[in-house]
Length: 111
Image 1 (cartoon, rainbow, N blue to C red):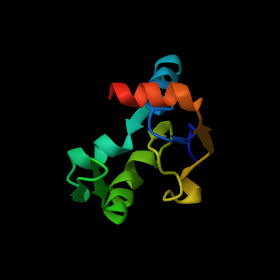
Image 2 (image 1 turned 90 degrees about the vertical axis):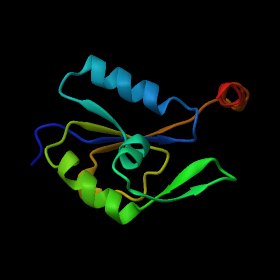
Image 3 (image 1 turned 45 degrees about the vertical axis):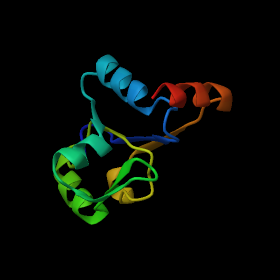
Image 4 (image 1 turned 180 degrees about the vertical axis):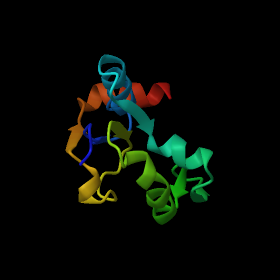
């Protein structure tokens, strides 16, 4: 039994996952935000870079192996656009963020 919940924030890029994860961690010190994409890149858990999408393809099996210990005690807000890879036993709450398409487009253009 975990002392704190694990939360998954998922949604299209630009919907505010990182902003919300950071805000949750700041408001609730028992939680910590974990940017899964940055975590994977910093640990070499990638397979290849996709030029067309300007993003890394992650080695999901290696990523899950590495994350197992991170989420074991709970209190983690997992911030990533993909939610279906996590084992159900890890997750207590999944939040899918959405955004008005015009606002989303404006945000993505700035990137």
